[in-house]
Length: 89
Image (cartoon, rainbow, N blue to C red):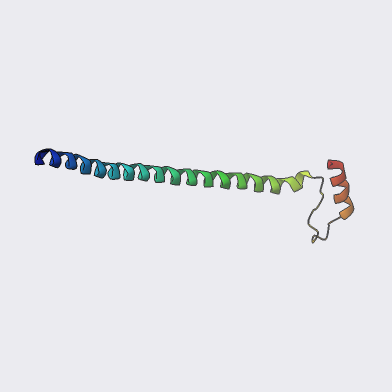
């Protein structure tokens, strides 16, 4: 084979390798950005769910017939709590 053909062949090979490296980096960068965006969105959803659960938990004692579930509260009544649990089951 001629030297010109070998130079052309190896030039094409090296340019293909470098293009592959460049293309892989661009794809990886896009994937990393999408992954970060997904993680942020997931975190926001979890925070919203936690806020809703906390809000529901704070509102539920008002709707639970005045039964206090904190045993350290002076108004705590174990008999009422057990009766409520039995009624719920």
